[in-house]
Image 1 (spheres, rainbow, N blue to C red):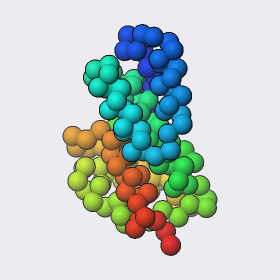
Image 2 (spheres, rainbow, N blue to C red; image 1 turned 90 degrees about the vertical axis):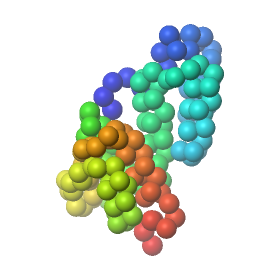
Image 3 (cartoon, rainbow, N blue to C red; image 1 turned 180 degrees about the vertical axis):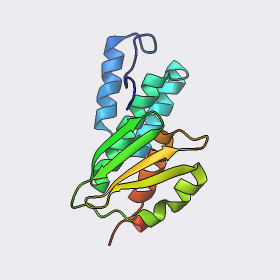
Length: 145
């Protein structure tokens, strides 16, 4: 991801509290739990700076990707590349609604193992679209049989 993904001193000034938040984030097991912690942090410390938003999005992507066989996610600006492992078999037909609703261009960079490139063309940031897309792939009805 472009830019830092961290909790800046100006947002959470106490080192012990920051360390506790990092530990809690590292122990989460679902993207929904990441969202819950993000809401809790916003409620306690106010609107999150971009570095904190990136931290939580990176945690959600890590959790989503690990369950789908994603080996690497690279986000630069409004472009993201998702590379799956050779054993992964994602069913991309379930993503059509996400990509259409969010106005994103999708390019298959490599067919085997699958690597796709997403370019945001609408109002939704590519990071947000990527989390939604991987979340859709993670739904039981979208998994390969």
